[in-house]
Image (cartoon, rainbow, N blue to C red; front, side, top):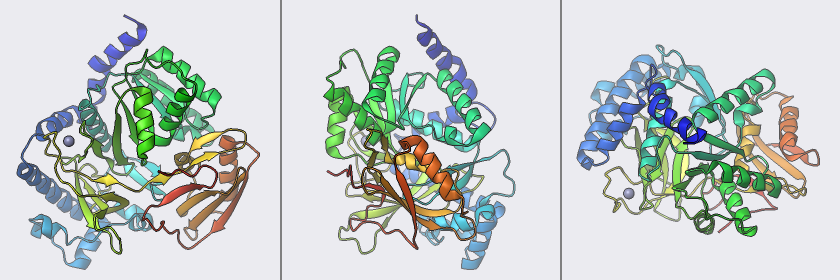
Length: 460
Ligand SMILES: [Zn+2]
């Protein structure tokens, strides 16, 4: 037995169960609940959801100032909410509502929470509180959905990812880096940085992968695609690997990219849909259908007005897990094309539909530095006062940030900070300018492009 095998055994038999039983986390019982309920009747699942919704709503009214005010203003009495129709009288919650009422979202009895910052898929950054319990839900959903594909908690994971925490300035960045390295080691994870995916780095990733022999790969679609494309171009040996799947997250993948990834790695592409402030929302099953994690979240599909296609809906969510700062009828701004509600796999969890938003172009410089557009969110992570943004790569070296400012919070020296972080990733031979705008429109297709590169343009 090799050291990696031993570590793997220790993690799955001892560490994973212990960590997931930490105070506030009840991951293991959640995984059990998910495994059982997936075969329930739809009616039984809906009853369970309604029970959880009612509980969350009365909790929010009792402990969260924002909801107390809104409910009072609209004459909503939590005890009167008895059906899903009643629940729909609660007004929608937008990202802006949270941005402007930040402190009023935190429950008066909340403790042991910390803040996470997300840029969000539509370029609206958000700082949001989370705690161990919320994290437990996140891990449980992931572990459960991955089990559909035969992926276990002790399987070896190759992670194609940035290091967002390590982007923090000074001591915080160093501490985050160390924490991450320890966590990777304990959890059997090979972290391959995807800030700069030039051929040299991609070859190093391949060499590390050869030594590590992962059971599955996890990463952003465009990073994974670049890696697959490199292996294909260089005709590198893939026969020695036996992968259970390639999990892609956070962004849309084009069909031709999916086909290339699957044929290079000789494994299925698994889709994960989630967001920092809400955790895992849906996962694809082996039939290729995105199933909503019904026992942990209530999802509504709201028809998009003025859309030429009547099958286009916006996803609105109410996760049952967050009692620090509950999200009720939260508008994600993510769009799906929804036509069919059933899946032949037999699971009762609702069908999400096909995600059609979240497209990022790839950023590439003349020197061959390449990064997935998502990493731009890391560059902006610790910059306060950005309501919405979009990055445009005009040519090889010229970049423009369109920014909707939060008046009074966006500071003058933020520009300098953004430029220096950006150059750290892409090198000094680039120019970065800023344009302050009142709004950023989505494209006519309804898709919102966070990163547009006139050099690399992704399309179907
Ligand atoms: Zn299915």
